[in-house]
Length: 154
Image (tube, rainbow, N blue to C red; front, side):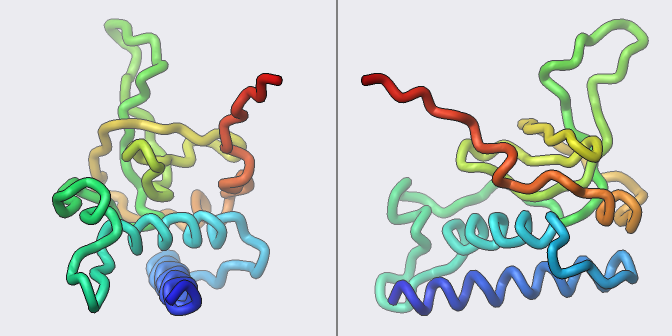
């Protein structure tokens, strides 16, 4: 059963990458960081939306008791994210443009807002400019760089 789940997540990752390559009209290199973001997002999608054939519910529904109903954007899409850390002033924007890379375990949207900058936000807005090849190809930071360190106490 675990092997089948892994196979499904890998196939979903391939689908996300192929769809993104089609939208930006470029081929992604084999070691491109966005491929690893696709792997993380595909496992998130699997847990929220894939229904098991025997129990007829998703893993998320089994844990929380109700199906996932929040909105998601297209993988790799250009969106505006509300930056909670921005110092909001009269003339300072609170929304930052970035590439949508998925959601995390706390249901926050993950955006690439700079070559070495990942922003987590609770609100996004879609833009009229849906895809940008330069923005996607410029992603250098991977999911492994964003793991928050957990202090170990002895």
